[in-house]
Image (tube, rainbow, N blue to C red; front, side):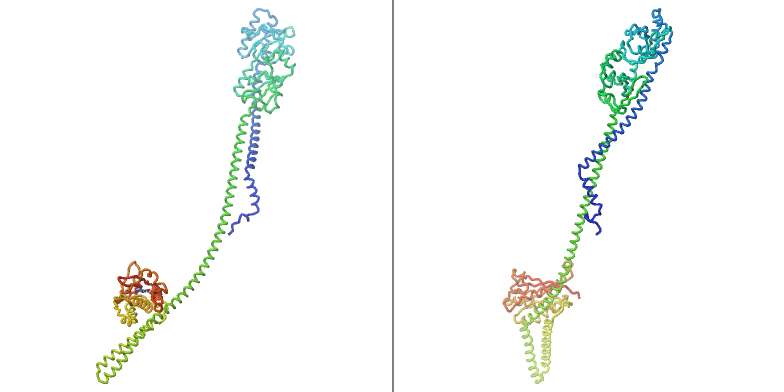
Length: 618
Ligand code: ADP
C-alpha cells in the first residue's frame, strides 16, 4: 500500500495546516475583508477625486474664457462713446436744445441693439445728463452717481471697471466707465456702460455647474446659486464692511460670510451653505488679476463617492466569495482527509478480517483433515461392528446350523447303512435312489457351509455387483430353514426373477437374514406365522430406478412409540441374552452404504420392513 497516512505527509503539511487553521478563524476573515474593502474604498475615492479635479480644471478654463468674453465684449464701447461729438457737445453745453434728446436716442438705440443694460452720461459732478433709459420710470437722468467708485475711478484714472448693484434699479451689473475729455482740457464727464452678467448665471445653472466669482475683497458677486451672492468667503473686518456699505456696492446686502475660515486651497473640498448636494465638492479657483476677480469652480464629488462605494462593495463581495471558496476548499480538504483516514482504517480492518479469514480457513482445513481421519476411523469401526454383528448372528444361528448339518449327516449315515443292506440284497434300483438322495444331502450340506463361509467373510466396502434379490432372499431363507420348519412358518416369496440390485451379496444377505430373524422372533407367540417377501420396481420422481423389497410378518407389529428408536444401536425389546439391539442399526448402515434405504412400519397385521436398493440393469 503506497498511500501516505496523514501523519506521514511531507514537511509542508504543518505550514498548510497552520494556514488552514488561520483561514478557519472567521474573525480573521472578517477583519481582512473589512480592511480590504476600506482600502478599496479609499483608493477608488482618491482616484475619483483626481478625476473630478482634472475635470474641474478643464471646466474652469472654459468658464473663465466665457466670463472674460462677456466682460470684454463692451470694453471699448465707453471709450468710443467718449469720442462721440454729440456726447462731447452735450457735456460742453448741457442746456443746448435737443442735445440731451439726441444723445438719449443714440444711447437707447445702441443699448437695444447690443443688449446692454444701460448706457449713461454724467457730467464732471456725477449728475446724469443722458441715459438709454431716459424714458423709463427708473431713469438715471437727473440722478447723481458722484459717490460711485466707477465715477470716481474714471475721473481719477480715465477709465474704471466696477461690479455692483445699481442704486436706482437695484439690478447688479458691471459698470465700465470712461472719462470724456473737455475740449479745453480736463475731464468734462464720464460715460458709463452697465453690462448685465446675470445671463451667465442662468447658463451656469442650466449646465448644472457650480461657479462663483468673487471680487478683490473676497465677496461673491456672481454665482450659479443665488444664495451665495453678495456674501464674502470669510467674515469681513468692520472698516471693510463700512467701505462697501458706503459705496452701496452690493445694495442692502448684510454681507453674511459664506464660510467661517475662508475658501480652501486649490484642489481642496468645500461645503457651501445650500440645500441638497449642491455647494459641496472639490474647489478649483482661477484669478483674473486685471479685474481683481477670482473665479471658483466647485465640482461635486457625489458621483466619485458613489463609484468608490460601488468599488468597495464589489471588493467586499469578492473578498467574501474568496473567503467562502477558501472555506469550502478547506472543508473539502478536511473531508478528503477524513475519508482517507476512514479508507485506511477500512483497509486495515479488511486486512485484519482477511487475516482472520485465512486463519479460520486454515483451522477449517485442519478440522476437515481431522474429520476425515475420524471418519476413516469410524468407518473402520463400523466395518468392525458389521463384522461383529455378523459373527453375533452366526452365533445365534449356530445351534440351528448344528441341527441343520447334523440332521443330513444322520440321514447320510442311515442312507449309507440301508444302502449297504440293499446292495447285499441286490436291489440296485433302491441303491441308486439312495445314492441319489445322499448326493443331494451332501450338496445341501456343502451349500450351508458355503453360506456360513460367505457370511463370516470380512468384505471390503467396494464390492458391489448385480445381485438377484430372489437369490439373496433364498440364501437367507436357507440359513433359517430349520427354524422355519420348527416354528411352522409359511413363507410367501414373491420376488420376480428380474429383480436385480447393485449390492454386495454377502452384506445384502446379512441384512435380509436380520430382517427375517426379527420377523420370526416377532411371530414366536403368534397363532399363525407367515413371512411374506414381495419385490416391486420403482422408477418414480425422475430418480434412477430401484427395487423395493417388503419383508412382512404376522407378528405383534412395532408399537408406534418404538418406530423412531428401533434403528438406534442397542435398542432392543428382547430379553437379555437374546438380542443385542445391533441388528437393525447395522442393517440400516449397510443399506445406506449400498445407496439404499431401510424403513419400518406396520402392515394389516404385523410389521413391514421396507428395503429399497438401486436397480442394476441386467
Ligand atoms: P434385536 O433383534 O437384537 O433386538 P434389532 O436391532 O434387530 O435388535 O431390533 C430391535 C428391536 O426392533 C427389536 O428388539 C424389536 O423390538 C423390534 N423389531 C424388529 N423387527 C421387528 C418385527 N418384525 N416385529 C416387531 N418388532 C420388531
